[in-house]
Image (cartoon, rainbow, N blue to C red):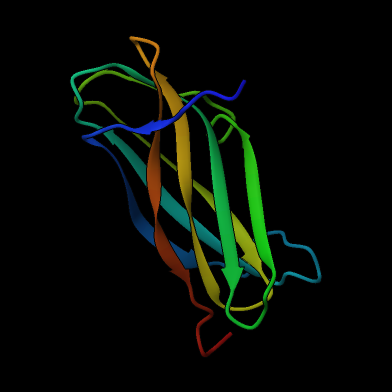
Length: 129
């Protein structure tokens, strides 16, 4: 049986920056890498463990939706006490401009299954590219 995930008040995600970085490794059919910088902030009164993530990436010139799901966050399972933050960076590769959004999933110290939304951010290819 799947756990029921509820949104946890005062747990938030901030997208600090998104940078077009064509020098990164990428497959030939997806030549546009974007590095993003994320911060997960726990202002709730409970300790929270982030166990997984789900990304949805959409490109402006395509009906295709890319869904990326997995355990942890960049190979880690952040465990955040009240007032603590976890920052990291990673990247998505695209064929064209578009946007990304998603959610992180985890548990509280009391055993509740929770999620926090990753706000939508644009993946805009610069004119010079």
